Amino acid sequence: MSDGQVAPEAGGVTVEVLATVDLDGEIEGMAGHQLRMRMVTIAPGGVFGPVHDHVGRPGTVYVLQGTITDHRDGVATDYGPGVGWPEDRHTVHWLENRGTVPAVEISVDLVRRD
Image (cartoon, rainbow, N blue to C red; front, side):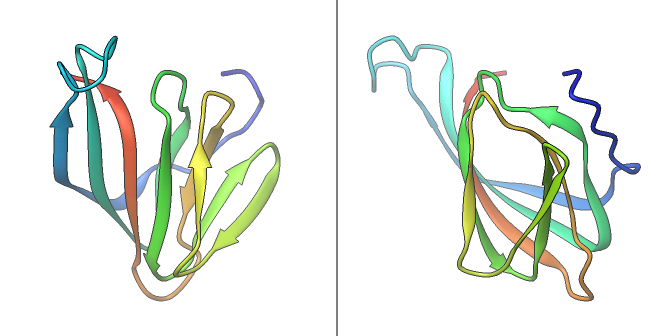
């Protein structure tokens, strides 16, 4: 990742795995992968970083509460409750909560099993 983005130090983030589905036998060619759903809470002033990509880990995000600012390609975009975004192989970003209440998102992605 050499797009020049710099994120503040990460912190103020909690991540809870809500569910996983092992994809062995579910979809041809997906052995060793799982579908994962997480709840990510970013405290006011919190940063979900560092700058990271989603190569090999596509997903989608849905905001439940608060506002999350997504920084990518030099652009900061705010997402509030009921809105979300895709994360594909072209996504290089970091997130923050500039608000005064915790921001909560549901993140669903496809990952290699540990």
